[in-house]
Every structure is written in C-alpha cells, then in structure tokens.
Image (tube, rainbow, N blue to C red; front, side, top):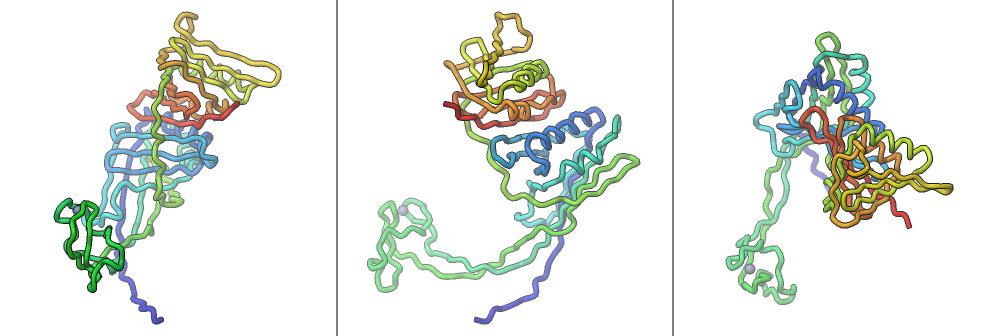
Length: 341
Ligand SMILES: [Zn+2]
C-alpha cells in the first residue's frame, strides 16, 4: 500500500486572554488557589470563555469536585481576544492546565496591588480532506428522520441496493455516494504561556496542557439545605476530626446534627434554632435526610473563603457546599458520601 504523504501547510493562530485581579480581591484569589491545591489537586484547569473564568475538576480519587465560576465582573479588567477567522475547532471556551505552585509563587508576597494574568495559547491549523457519505434524499420526506437507518434487511434492498424503509413506514429509494470535503483541523501548539505580572514584577510559566474533557456537574436533587457560619462550623469540624474519621449529617425539621462515631465513643453537634446557637443560619429538610462523609474531605470542601456556607445533601448522596464570598463568585464543591452500614 502506498501512502500519500503531503506536506501540510500550517497556519498559526492564537488566543489571548488577560484578566486583572484587583488588589481587594487578591487575597481571596490566592486563598482559592491554595484551597484547590490542598483539597483537590495542584494542576488546576482554567476554562476561559468570553465572559467568565471557570474551574471544574475532580481530585485524583474522584471523591471531590470543585465547581468555580468567576464572571468577568469579578475582575478589575477582563479581555479575551481571538482571531476573526478562527475556525470553530479552536473557539472558546478553552481549558488550560496550570500549576498551582507557579501561581502561588508569583503571588507570594504581593499585597495591595492589582495582578495581571495573561494566557497565550497557540494553535496550528491545516486544511485536510475527509470522505463523507451523502444521501439523496438525506431526510425522510414523511417524518424528517435522517435516511441512515434502513429498516429493510440487506437482501430486501433490491438489485441496486437502494430500496429503503424508514422507521415511520415510508418506502422509497435512497442513493448513497461518497464525497470528499475540505475540513480544517487544529492542534495545540506554541505559545502556551501564562504570564503573571504587577507593575514591577513579571513571571512567565508554561501552560502544562490543554484539557478537552471538563466533567459535568452531578445532577442531584437535594432534600436538605443547611446554612452555617463557616468559621465556627469549621472549628467544630476540626474538633470532631481529632477523634473521628467519618461524620453523619442528619437534617430533620429545624435541626441539623453532625455526628462523629469512633470505636471508643461518639461526638455530636446539635444545631437548632432553639438551642441559641449562632452557627446555624438556616435549615430546611424534606423529611429526615441522613448521609455520611469523610471528615477530612469535608474540611477540604469547606475552605475558609467567606463567612457563610450552604450545605445541600440528600440521604446517601453527594454533598454540595457553596461558599459565599465578598464578591459575586460561584464557589461550589461536591463530596461523595461514604457508605457505612
Ligand atoms: Zn420517515
């Protein structure tokens, strides 16, 4: 077999994104990167879209997920540009993997300054030919289904092989032929750079990789929703974590119970409106809801990024935590339940 080798003519194209973290949001941004590094993983996928920056990924054991969305209004400045004739395959959104340590190193001792992040992402594209099959008619004239699913067995398709029966019952002739079409292909190329700078410092890092599969958010119906004062709640969880590995969340009526159980004892935190506790801000439950979680992971999905956290769960299903910060950002985490008998 002779393989035809043609020299590809590449075109270089690039995406450029620039966002400025304002000095007032800098600490929150740094704390967020640190929380993601410690809790989920140190290679962080940044998804850049026209109007927002998002981060959605799971930890290596696939027990926790972060789902962060920072709309452009969260930034002091926001600019995303692509070339005008960019083919669809290299359009936004694009997800790039960056090293949390690089970001934390660059931000290190910076205070009270705006910090500029620039992402330069290059692609090379080339024209290619692809063989496709065209059909006439391409859709069933009766029901509109594409004519790709012939209901007739091979031996009933006539001499020319064109007799066709649609699922709706329509019968007719469908002609098929191959056609060569031009397509444009692209691959991730140079540059692949993340620049972090202030008015007097500049750091350049390579982007580790491009990510093609961002996991979907779990589709769960939550039957319990509890809102707590985050710092106080974290302190109590830390106390429980000294003796216990797993806690049970129980929400019923107007009470939220966090129960730790170990071989030599148990501990319980009872939060209700009536026991005069400022930690519980709200509780809503549809019947009794009960689920078990790893207490260490629980602390990871409740990082101290704001004053208030909402916990949503249903019996034996994942927990969703949402942290309210000073800016209009979505900071959510998911934690898989522990199955305990
Ligand atoms: Zn049909």
